Length: 257
Ligand SMILES: Nc1ncnc2c1ncn2[C@@H]1O[C@H](COP(=O)(O)OP(=O)(O)OP(=O)(O)O)[C@@H](O)[C@H]1O
Image (cartoon, rainbow, N blue to C red):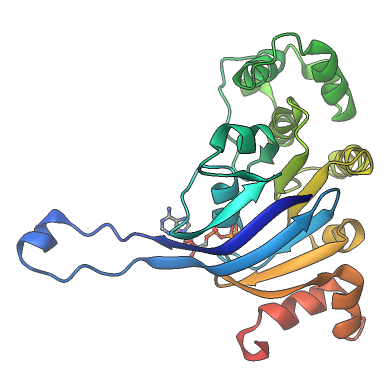
């Protein structure tokens, strides 16, 4: 079974046309097209890279998969569950590490992870919580309040939150932005071990050397369009084996598409 399917997916963000503009008969401005007819299948157990420059549409796509935003047209499924019609099952199958540091400053790390477990109906999840925090180097911070953690540690908690319900599909939206070498190493070791156990990993990152090392297949987005989709080795081969940074620039520059 495919882990994720995306069919004819487009997203147009509506313009906030003012009431005053409507009253004086000003024509409504059309919205901004962030995704344009994306078709993509990600296989079960794949380590998949979703790459593109700032504003390419990566987070817009992830938000739709996570049920946080509705597509304008098209559809998407996670493990066969439609992200809109079967929202609960699709969300249960997905763990998302968001790009932005969102947290409640009044809870401890353990309380944060217990609360997150509760959202997924898991009451006695401490064994797994302990395993996650250990693997993310957070064991000594588990009773600390979120507000007392450094930025990199808060990001580790976001990763832990995405994993509390052992989702088969894990999306990491720039998980290593602003984190030190230690976390990067421990994070990739842990995520790779989950991938070996069968979890599907979808990674967006601007650290292309990480994507080159980890991802079996890569999609490049540019201005909402899917401009390349292939195995990492084929992408490197097709662009003269000059590295993923060269391939990134090649595929995401307008004149090459
Ligand atoms: N809520 C919104 N309303 C209007 N436009 C939006 C909204 N969210 C995103 N956009 C626009 O859609 C485009 C794609 O944004 P998105 O956040 O998906 O890009 P991204 O590839 O994740 O970029 P980055 O690498 O910087 O995180 C951008 O031009 C952005 O300004």
